[in-house]
Amino acid sequence: MTDRYQLAVIGAGPAGMAAAVQADVLGLDTVLLDEQAGPGGQVYRSIDRSPLRGTRILGPDYAAGAGLVSALRGSAVEYVSGAGIWHIERGFRLALSDGDGIRLITADRVILATGALERPMPVAGWTLPGVMTAGAAQLLLKSSAVAVDGAVFAGCGPLLYLVAAQYLRAGLAIRAILDTTDPPRRRDALASLSLRASALRTLAEGLSLLAEIRRAGVPVFRGVEDLRIGGDSRVAGVAFRRDGIWQRLDGVTTVFLHQGVVPNLQLAWAAGCPPRWDAERLCWTAETDAWGRTAVPGLLVAGDAAGIAGARAAADRGRLAALAAACSLDLLSERRRDALARPLQASLRREEAIRPFLERLYRPRFGLRVPADDAVIVCRCEEVTAGMVRQEAHRGAAEANRLKSALRCGMGPCQGRICAGTVSELAAAACGVPVQTVGRFRVRPPIRPVPLDQLARLAAPEAAEA
Image 1 (cartoon, rainbow, N blue to C red):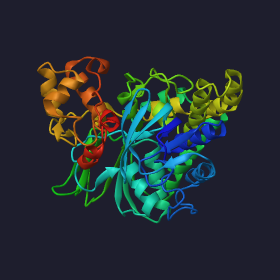
Image 2 (cartoon, helix red, strand yellow):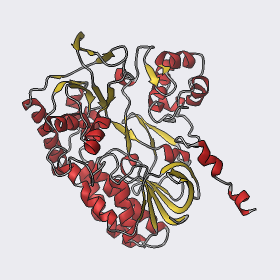
Image 3 (cartoon, rainbow, N blue to C red):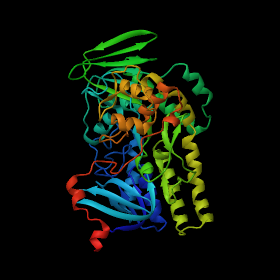
């Protein structure tokens, strides 16, 4: 591994792999850095070594990732696995930690293909052992064929039903699905449904998943408004409210929560991109143009990090970002860039056609994003409760970084990845101000844990030259 590249791509999911391979085709000296042990990202996790690959359990969309991995393996891209990026400086210098210690590399251009994170669902009992996200449950299934019988799936969104269907195909029983989709939103969503063939095809795939679940006889409770997970040392039951009536499922030991995903942009903010609150999608984003270019010159964002649209759209965005990077380095004319981009842009429009429908239909309920119960923990790392945030906001600290200083929320190992949106929305609602007024936590290096002995062995460049 050298220390300087024309392009560094961070993240080996569909966007990162597609970007790196496209850049290699265009002649860029490219390194692809990823913290996982193998390529694939979250969507295609363990695609070349999953014990379930080649079966019908995970489905054809998962199998499609094999082509991207094959293209990466056959390219001249320098792929570095197990590389956790913990700092990025403009210019660009990247600090990464791997099994051999800390390395510093520089790149003329950087494409962040850091994917998405599951939106937290802070309900009573969500920190109990036995509770995890549906995405985490899927990763265990993909990577190790590990699963559990009798789980309750709670929340909304396509991934929730996909994982449930995959569980059923694996021969596992599901205790119940608690669907938190707000029924009135269905009409609003239908009004935004595109009649493009690609959107209708995606809709048909979703309806097929629901039919598969229904045929299996899984109890589905629709219109769930509130959720509480009970238990002392671990999950023991679930209570939920719908139509104003509380119901309970006893003897439950496992709960999978999910209410959509949001862009993972910690590195973008660390590099100086200003965070922007997207009131329609209810998440923090970074402003990008059609090529993925950001406010920081030379820094591009691709894939779900630039907006949630699925794996195929992520790959298209990765290739577009690679074209933009090559053009900015004078390795590609604007005319040639635009010609190569046209089919990618057309494909991207097809893939994005269904998004307005899905975003309106599966908009998470306010009460499942911002807990009314003051005792509910919102920052898991530092055990900060909703009541603590409200109290501090009412004292006049309705600004994210003042809350961070007072309560330590966002200072734990996750560095605010999980709690930032919740804390901002919670403080904004408590004080009756827009979320933008509260703002988001500032990102400080290191943005992920780094062993102290590795930092101690890292000599400053000035000292090394002396």
